[in-house]
Amino acid sequence: MAKEYVRDFYGHILGSVEDQSNGDKVARDFYGKILGYYRKFNDVTTDFYGKVLYKGDACISLVTTYGSK
Image 1 (cartoon, rainbow, N blue to C red):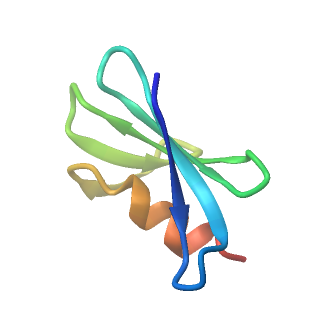
Image 2 (image 1 turned 90 degrees about the horizontal axis):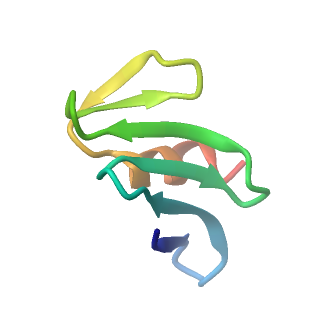
């Protein structure tokens, strides 16, 4: 399980995207709170509550949009 840190222009960490062994991903903010998931089987990105937000992998978008607050 690899973890990729997402940084802003100035190098500050906004959050991370963690790869799971089955191909799924978990997006977390700076404090470790889960922002959403990428489900490889369905090829969708959902928020924390399971609402479909994007088709495809958009975990980095979740972090840059919601993780910077």
